[in-house]
Structures are given as structure tokens and as C-alpha cells.
Image (tube, rainbow, N blue to C red; front, side):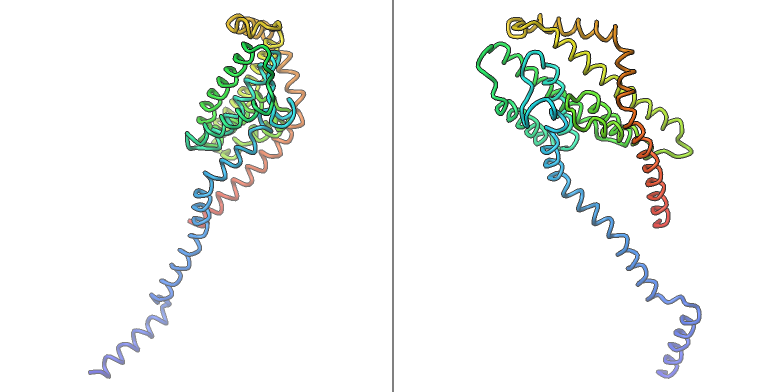
Length: 297
């Protein structure tokens, strides 16, 4: 009886060896495959766990360079009536960047408000013209709240992120980073480009460019409106100051919008060529990633 069982086991082993269908190597290969595919998942999980903290640090670092770099000394705000557009747009852009990088509501508000308040304190706003100082503080607060609302809607696919970057590049009064932001914004829709998505890619590109030009027109129009204010008007009658800014904004853009668009296109030609290079890089990188995913599956 025992001898018969032994011969049966030997025959089973012989069949397994001849066919190569051993269950032990199969289990081993499945375990190895599972171990191999778990490595990128672990990295992605680590990035997701670290991002809330990393996003807050990055938002705090980028706030002043993206919003106010070039308008004054480090961590100071433009707080004169003639520079009201810089203050409004700078606080809007800074808060929008913070809101885009920080997903939790209260941390994003705390960082944006804290940095704006710190900039106000470090600017050393003089005691003169208390009405004007109050109006400028309200203007900064309005820009902050609007920026938080805009930045919270920047989360999405590449097209949504590209549109947000184009808006920041057009609105920001900072002299640093507008060109690189525009280049990345124009190139980013090509990350999802394919032979089956020609029309959506072109529409996304048009959307990005139109957003940027619209933001540039708004920024330049507001600047012209605030430059038109007479001294003391903002502090004495903020409503009258708003009417002056609004009327000059409309008038200036009606008369000069085509010249502004042409001048902006010329000024950023070099960055557009960089966007072309980045677009090609994005297409190649996306194709490689897609190929790797196909092989893995």
C-alpha cells in the first residue's frame, strides 16, 4: 500500500516536471509580481501622506515671490493709493496659490491671512490718512477672499491647472515667474494630447491663451484706473474712488485693448517658444508613461 502511494507521487512529480506546470513556481512568481507592483503604490501612498505638510510649506515659500516680487522689498506690500491694483491683485494671486496647494480649508485661510498680515506689519504703514489705510486694508482683504475662492477651483486635470497658471501669470504684479508660468500653462494641455484628442487639445490651448490675455487686460486696466486716482480720494470717499477706477478701467481698455494684446504677445514670444519645447517633452513623456502602464498591465 505504501509502495503504491510512493510510485504515484513519483509519477505526479514526473508529470509536473515534464509539463512545467508546478504550482510552487507559479505562486512564487505571483508573489514576486505583487512585490514589484507594490513599490510604486507605496511611493504614491507616501507622497499622499506627505503632501498636506509639503503643500503648506511650498505655499508659504511661494506666496511672496509669486504675488509681490519686484514691487518692493522682501515681504512688503504696495500700500499707496496709486498702487491699489498691485495690492489687490497681489493678495488675490498669493491667496489663490495658497488655496491651490493647500486642500484643507482652515490651514489655507490661516496661511494666506497670516502672510498677508505679516506683510502689512513689515511694510510699516504710516499713521497718516487713516481712512485711506482702512480702505487699503479692506482692498487687501477682498483680494484675499477672492483668491481663496479662485484657487480652490484649480484642482482638477491638466487643463484646469493650466488655466489657473495662465490666470496667475496674467494677473500677478510680481516680475518674477510670469514667463515660466505662462510657458508651463501653454504646454500642459499636451500632457493629455493624442491622435484621438486633437480638437479637445486645441480647445484647451485656446482656453489657456484667452485666459492669460484676459488676465493681462484686467491687470493693466486696473493699474490704469488706480493711477488715475487723485490724492486723498480713497480715504475721503472710497465709493467715489471705486467709480473713478471703474470708469478709467473701461475707457482705457476700450481704447488700447488691441495694442495691449499685441505688445503682450511680442513680450512673451521667447516663453512661447519654450512652451513649444515643453509641449513636445510632455507628449513624449505621456507616451512613455502610457507604454509602461500597458506593459505593467
